[in-house]
Amino acid sequence: MTEKLNGRFFKSQNKKHKEIIFFVHFFEGSPAALRKQIQLVNQLGYDAYGFQLPTMQEALSAPFTSDLSFGVKHIYTEEIEKNLNSIQDEKIIFSFSNPCASSIEAIVRRNCYDIKALICDSGPSFRMVKSGENLLHWNKKHSWLMTKLLNPFFSFFWSPLHHHDTPKHLAALPRNFPVLTLLCENDILIPPQDTILGFENQKHLNWQSVTFTKTGHLLAIRNHPDQYRSVVENFLNNLK
Image 1 (cartoon, rainbow, N blue to C red):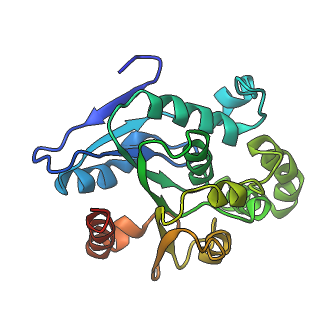
Image 2 (image 1 turned 45 degrees about the vertical axis):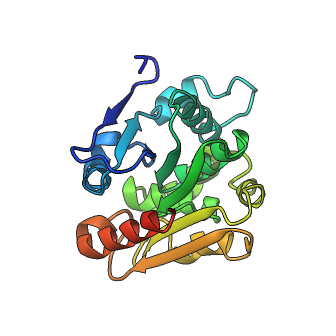
């Protein structure tokens, strides 16, 4: 793997499957933050791959992609696509929070080539402006007034389209393409319904959704480890 792509493989000690689980971390996260999920798929016999997305600061220092799309979401898409192209094996994408929208876009840009399925944990939001406001207020601890002032700029720099393009990307996925959404009942940043509303009308997809009770954003694997493992394992097993 080239240094420029900043990715690495996490090998299973008991590899059983030819597919690579391709991880896309959450906003301002890292592959290290997905240690539990990577360990889980390794235990299930899958090799995994993780890489570092640009930080918000890095993305905004060069806010256009090579095809002149503007915004962090599309910069993420391009980085995901580059990393996908670097791996020859079939891949299952395991993505988190709002970068799930970038993962979906990358799949479509590559005509779903060599992507067998998609798992989305805690996202994406199909109410992106609301999601941005939630992130600024709850994660960054801004006041109500400062959140209202900052969010139009934050949401615009994430993507001027505010995820309104994501339903079109979902519609472009092949018939019966398998998707699993893992949602958290008490998610303040991306409430379950804000994800469900984007998938529920995509009748051509083989879409499954599980909501974990009494847990917040990205915390399902910590608060419900056995259920989380069972849901992911069953989904992967049914791909065969």
